[in-house]
Length: 273
Image (cartoon, rainbow, N blue to C red; front, side, top):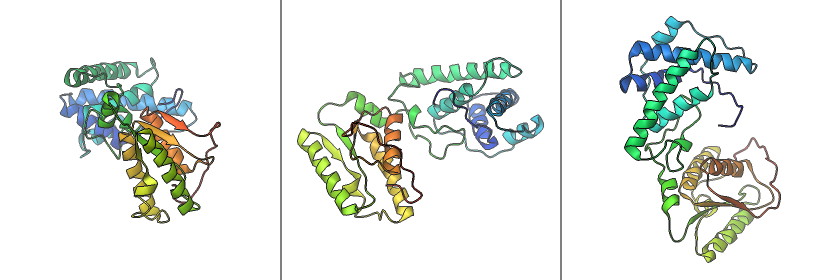
């Protein structure tokens, strides 16, 4: 989370998912509802100070939504810790909701200790799945495991490393594939293992088809999770390249480029790679 950035965490379904998780783990229904309603109000207050004009629902409606909702609980403790961390980040200390903030911090402390006891790691350690969690209380994609296998392997790897080749594809596709192939060979001759999506996806996923292009991008991000380094090539970085770069940064994967200056982001409404 970037410093000084306010998140809109007012989605009641997201709160319901966190509520279901906390109650499932032994929290009292009423005390958990009270705490989360205070967090909800604190989040709205902070958002409105940032220029929004959000109106909270009444307590009775909030409690009903929490207790009569069939929301899915989170799959892992690391996802619960992400949700608690987002709320903690997004609330002011003090003010009318200070008790809710304080209670949230105590609940988070319990989860932090439990996570450490079960895994031996601090929840924000690079080998945990914390960085893979989305910045929302209602994530579309949750980590299946508490630990990030790719980060764990990077921490303990020996021998050749997996190097992701990040380069443009759109435009002169054949020329760009040849360029990426050349760079992949350079990595191979170094003794490392090139992971080059240009050689993997174009034969089976049409980059001009938005549905297939989007699916290929999701698969590229999964490949990045397994890599130990990213190499970024070319003077023009497409939106797809920027998405890959930002994802690698989020995972704290080292990024190298052949450019002396970072190109400006190029926006496009068409498929991204």
